[in-house]
Image (cartoon, rainbow, N blue to C red; front, top):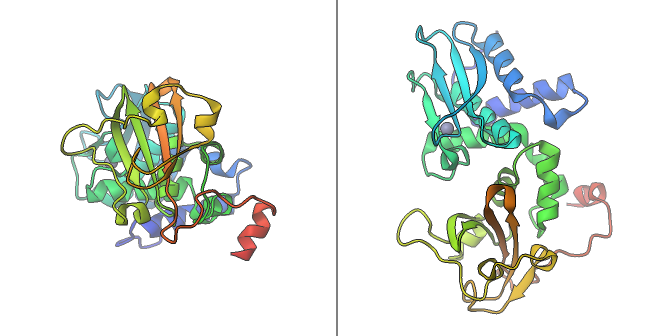
Length: 293
Ligand SMILES: [Zn+2]
C-alpha cells in the first residue's frame, strides 16, 4: 500500500493520471469519473470509501461530499439539473475534496457553482477545482491544442470541451489559468455580468471586471454583448476601439448560450508589447507546433 499522507493536489491528480494512462481505455479522456472515485477510494481507503455517486436536487448547490451516518462511507451528490458535462467536472471536484479535505471536514462539504469553478477565493475550493481540472484536462494535452500564446475562438475552446467531456466554462477557465495572453471571459444575463474571469496577465494589467463586490457590472453600450444581436460574425470576433470595453482596443467574441440562458463573451487584448491580438495563421499541424515550442 502506498503511503499517501501529505499528498497534495498535483500528486493525487498525477497519480490518477498515471493509472488512467496505464489502463489506456479506448476513450481515454471521457472516462466515468464516478466509477474512478469509487474504485480509487476503495483501493486507497477501504476504511471509509466513496460508496455512492448519485444525482440529487441540491437546492442551489452543484455538488456535495457527504458522510454516511456511521462516518464509514462517503457519498458524492451531484445536481441532476446540471448538464452531464457539468456533473462530470463536479464529481471530479468532490473526489478532490474526498482525497484532500475529508479529514478536516468530517461533516462533509457542499459546493455551489462558484466554488466548483474555483472562483470564490476559498482555498479548499480552489484546490478541489484544480484537482478536477488537472484530472479531466491534462495540461500537456490541452496545451498541444491551445498553446499559451494562442488566441482561441469559441470553436477552439469548444473542441477542447468536447474532447474532455466538460462544459465550455470549465475548458475556458482551464485555458485562462495558463495562457500568456491578456484575455477575459464574461458570463452575463439581461445586460449584466453574472461573473467574469481574467487571465493573470490581463489581471496584472488592470483588465478585470468586479462582480463579487460593488454595484452590478452593466455591459457597456456599444459592445456586441449589450446589443443583443448575435451573429456568426460576433461569435468569431469583432474589434472595438478604445473606450468601449476598456481604455484600449479589444477584440470581442460573444454568443448566446440559449440552453443556459446566458451570454458568453471573450475579450482578447493586445499583448503588452503592442503586438497583434490575432493568432498567427496556422500553417503547420499541432504536432509540429508542439515540438517547436
Ligand atoms: Zn467544493
